[in-house]
Image (tube, rainbow over all chains, first blue to last red; front, side):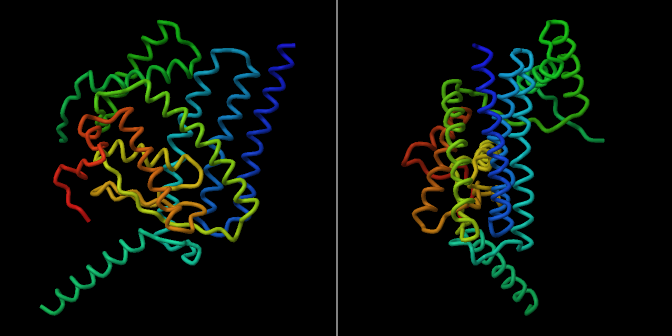
Length: 128
Length: 190
């Protein structure tokens, strides 16, 4: 009886994790540009992996494996945003995004401001 | 020849404990002998492969940490479902925004942690960080009005507030008062 209940719990967790993978796939296909696809590609896996690891923990029924699974998730938490940030930053700087899809862009104002200032400084230097 | 300052053991201790825990978890063996051997290896590694120490505040509130973990999991589940729903219903017609959020704390650790947590929760992604003013530039899904952008800013500041209550130092805690000045350490304002 207990075993059956735990098996059902495992099944629910695995299905939840698989659903997150499906979410990532649908997002990759349907979102319009690099940055919004980044959301779909990296984020649902944080929850998806957690659900899969919980399924393993429930099915193994051993406490010894729990610390490994926790560390597995922590390393995922530490590394996923770093790569997402690097790709997103490079994508923004090389203009791999569609400006027409942005309703506002605070960073663009800063970049424009810095560019104008540098141009003015350059003008001053060349007129001297 | 590079000179380096000696790190006191007390500052290094959280790192060593973490390394020993990883060692025990990877061997799936938390017996005393294994942990002592792990501690020796951790101490050797930390001293041979030298990295700049992370400046911790020396303060850690367990209750806020538990509360923060709960909030994080809640937001994670909610936002994952939201992004899935957006992918199914809106898809290509999605409107996004790059929102700048000025954080209160000048601490590198807190700015990194806040950006990390915001990046982990679906729907927002750190595109750029301005370290001199602790400003995060977030790319957010489905933000079409300035009200939505304001909600993103409020959420980012609340995340920072939680992190400060978990592990911020005294100056950061003082900044949480509503009438406290921004960055009282003489950094220039934009």
